[in-house]
Length: 488
Image (cartoon, rainbow, N blue to C red; front, side, top):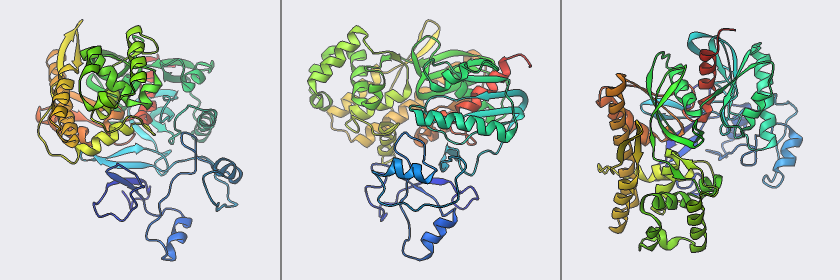
């Protein structure tokens, strides 16, 4: 992959004696490595003064990359000490692609430069459709006939600059491919910039697609699957059809629809987005949900480290249901465990707590597996976390190493998901399982789960052509919309 013509960034395991500074990718198990792919890269390295360069993209965090000289100087003046500019204009923003090895395959973490706009081949014909993706790690997709074209990585649509790039990319891709879409597919979340834009497109038929259904359909589409499958969609956030925030879902699904067959037990998300930035809130929420307020009287390191004033505020928010929407998110469970064992109270970038939890788990070969509750509630399987938390707290009281606790959590999660898949196979008479959602960027969990499912004689499908996270969402939206709208 390093030497391929696409020249992506490849995530590679750090060596213990690596000479790269500790400040580069701190508390991570991988470095992102790439070889020169532009004339400038070759010129910089040709003199022999550098064996390697540490580089980053030309943008402020959460903003699109700068591509014009004046724009770069204006936006990055407080960051860069000097600028090397050029008189050849850059036509369109396009980040580096990022890949890694997972579940025995090359996986796209970010599909962008080098891979776009190469088409993805579909197993069936679709009407011209534009899918506008979600809010985070946004991409768009144009599909027609038996081809789907997923755009470069656009990023998080959380500011005016990113939204401008989104509209620019949509127009450019349509002109480049000469596709005039008749259908526009969008997420169900009413406040997403992409959803609002789609609903304004009165010339096209507008189709709302549930977030996690799109994840499963994305996996199905790139693997050429038709018919029903068991879909495990695990991520951080997605708007559910019941008004709660989903993210730990098991579906019986095809392109035309889905049945929510199982989910993780819901817990409050105290403070909404603030709970994503501060994982300690999620740890407290899970503890409160399973043990009640008396948990704050326990003598344990997590409780001792709490700011009691802030903790009491969170407890009141949860009790009153104030700005504390319910979530079944598996990503938030990772956050909670990371905070509970002292790894990460606050995050500086998306999924930081979950990534660091995976990294410490890689340092252990412990075979233990924490238990989960698995019960039926109103005809739907629910994965509870009470016994999981009891086991973690017991290990913490014994001063068990965090890498062992994290490994047992990963092992237990793979085990309960395999058990759940077996239950759904028995009831639905299905043997194909599709795995999708940002949680599956965790290669340790992916490897454990894929291995366990295959040992249980399942046919398992993962993603390699588009990201398993929200970067692949638009592909799923496109095929669902084209399958559910009558031929135009």
